[in-house]
Length: 76
Image (cartoon, one colour):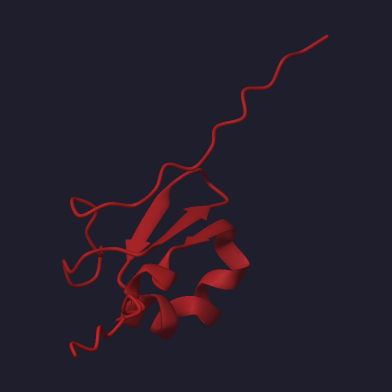
C-alpha cells in the first residue's frame, strides 16, 4: 500500500506578492508541473483564460477584497 501526503493550501497573506506587479497576491495558481504563480486580483483576471490549460488548481481569495459591512449607530 502506498501513502499519499495531501497538503492543505495555506491562506495567502500580506507577504505573498503578485508575480507580475508585486501587489498583494489574492490568487495562487498551482501548475501541472508542480510550480506555482501568485497574482493580484487584476492580473488573475487578465491571465485566467491563458492559465487554464497549464493549471492544476486555483486558490482564489479575492473575496478578501470585498469591503467589510459597515454598521451605523444612531445616537439619540
